[in-house]
Image (cartoon, rainbow over the protein chains, first blue to last red):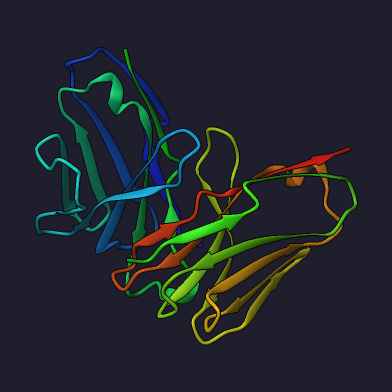
Length: 118
Length: 111
């Protein structure tokens, strides 16, 4: 199956700093990538959808100026948490799809990033 | 707005038991439904994908069924093992390829 690599797997940062999370599709071109967030004991919630070469579409309640998403190539999307605060501490995970992969193969997820803001 | 509910929230069984995890969704107009496994602090492992035209999928000891008309899916695990202990997530596909997740069922299989 297709492989999606997410980096870093965990990060601890100080309040007020910015953190960048990378999501790469290793063996296919991902025209669309999704970013999810999961708080403890909660379900994964979609934050934004990014399409290569265009602006990301954010879900209601997600601050686009705080969570900067860049999908500059068909294999890389980045999520930057700007001016991080302790309440941003969460598990962030990306997913990628490509029409060429075909829906029968399902959605492909990265390994996730555990962000802790202190 | 699509909502996904998973019951039970947690389940503890002795090794060897067969078990069923339930998932329900409010909007029957789904594209696909996918079951995942999530280990603590880890990403998602896809278990089974059921396309909207299918009624079930099987992989090893796992069998997932889909009844769109009633808005339900079940994940059947046969002969459970301690290694099956994890949180199981049900997700339905949105029209854009995004997934709407349930909160999961935390399964514990006791040796």
